[in-house]
Amino acid sequence: MPLSPHRRRFARIAAVLILTAALVGGAVSATAHTSKHQSLRGLKILLTNDDSMQDARPNQSDGRGLYEIRKALCAVGADVVVIAPWSVQSGRGTAVTNSGTMQVGTKELGAKYVNDCKDAPSKGLVFGLCVDIAPCSATSPGATPSDTVKFATRGGLHDLANWEGEPDLVVSGSNSGNNVANSVTDSGTVGATIAAIEDDIPAVAFSSASNAAGVFPDSNYAATAEWGARFLIGLRSEGLLKQSKFALNVNYPNIDDDKKAKKAVWASISDGMFAFHYYTRQPDGSYAVAIKLCSGLPTCEVTRPDADKVWVIDKNHITVVPINWDRTYAHSVDGKRELAKVKSFVEKKAPRP
Image (tube, rainbow, N blue to C red):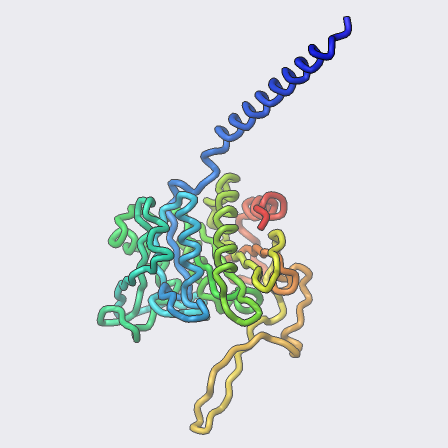
């Protein structure tokens, strides 16, 4: 018997209610199933960089990115402790200090960042490591990024933060400027991650682009940090945040100047030089050292189609590059299975910017 209009309307409402209940129930079930993977809760992270922890320069190139990363990691539940160079150590690569005395310094955090980690077990402690026989001062040279990792994991974290054992992860950055091409070799930001994986500790480096004026705006640092936290959560959910066969070098493009970041790509270190050092003789016989973007020289030309320099600088994509400690040419790669899984994650599941 055909249903009356009233009954047909009632049937439609009932069907909608049943479907809604099923969808809500499924969503609740899915949430219950994945909730433990939606944060970095329980993860102990050592945070360092090569820009220092000072955050005092007008162009924000001396540690502002570190505090944005600290904020983002604490916001998703990580227990973060910062042990970074006391003064800027950009370009120090994997250099280490072999003798002398190191001191641990602190600074008062500005109102913008002071409460970011108040609910974390270690409260987001921030320390700077200098090489000096006296307490760290304005003229104290900083320990290198590699120094900070070695110091932290060989007693420093125990003494300063009461941590037992090694951190679960070393995060380095966010650097002021992209680390691509030959800058990867120079980079202390990347160097810190090499020190970590040499001790079998997983590590990820993050770098943020400047804007067209050569300034490092909060927007670029904040975007790198927010995406970076989601990226780490994704890796953790896939069981990929425990491997230490290789580190990951992540570069985030400029989103200032009305630009937008594009999806992450799996890239390689560019064969075209990015940073070009030059030396100018002075009247007194000394040489002034400077650095500029490489252009107009054969050594600047890029031939690799997956070059990080092209993808992040020219095309505005986020780039992810695996970095290994082993410099043996043509040596068989250890961790091929992990490499394939991380590459697949980046290409298919990495968060959108």
